[in-house]
Image 1 (cartoon, helix red, strand yellow):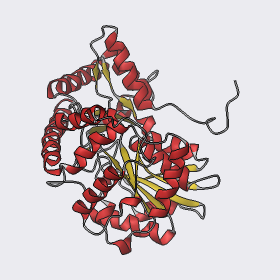
Image 2 (tube, one colour; image 1 turned 60 degrees about the vertical axis):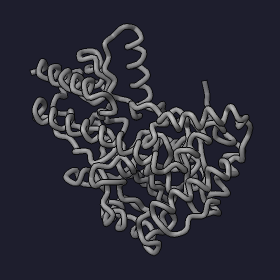
Image 3 (spheres, helix red, strand yellow; image 1 turned 45 degrees about the vertical axis):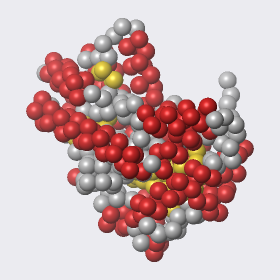
Length: 397
């Protein structure tokens, strides 16, 4: 069968594929511990869900403006202004059906054939696919392993050409959990400004940060003089435990926002109206929201510490990136490669069969030596999963 060149190179999401297989095996009666999912295990706070339900009861189930309701866009702008200061124009905010949609709209609006887009690596699995859908070329940039792969201007310059048009960077990082310092972000921003390169900053994990008491450093924290063309991508999925509600947003200059709104008007139209009502509650009831975020982040921090302690104790031969944000442990498995199991996909398949744990192969993130484990699960399941992993590895020796 012949398909359009638009999707000829498109690959399915590896993270969703692993999670779906784990759920299928569990439904068949297997005792699978799913450590692959990229979503909080907490329920959406009840008062946020109630706002969505109330919206349905009040008849807020019709079309809204394509870029989102003015109330929600104004609330997001006000929240950004509260966090970062300065003046934030609500007309520069476009609400999308999840941050993944936000990223796609941005790539499709900015890039095209002949463009090269630098991607700070290891990368979230969908970045290169989105760049490819825009008919541009992804170029992967790895920082030094001893710096948890955080890229520097020197790393970027080595990969840049006269066709470089964009840079996608995620902090805190999925999959590694690495968090850029404000000085590191400033150096990257100034390099991109001087190069005339668009920065797409995926900050969906900004609140899940263990480097300080509060959110991770943001491109929005930088002096305006340091930042050139820039798009912020964020949403409610991670911080508010609202993955299924599908609400993300972009913040950019107004001219680009209008173009992305026009694109959205011809593709998906508006995000679901009841979901926008729920998100409106999250962005306006800020004290309640911050209390919920703090509770969840404390749990993630405790689980992070548990995972690191168990790896140090039970799996001393496995090196890992100590996660300073998000809810993933990114660890090397090439030390157990052998005939018949010589890549990360084979290791993950073996772990699913031998240990009944689901993790995601590092090849999905650009480095086949690694595997990503999510600790967005209960302390008990996390500990049991890591002990199963250690027992399976011990059995190889």
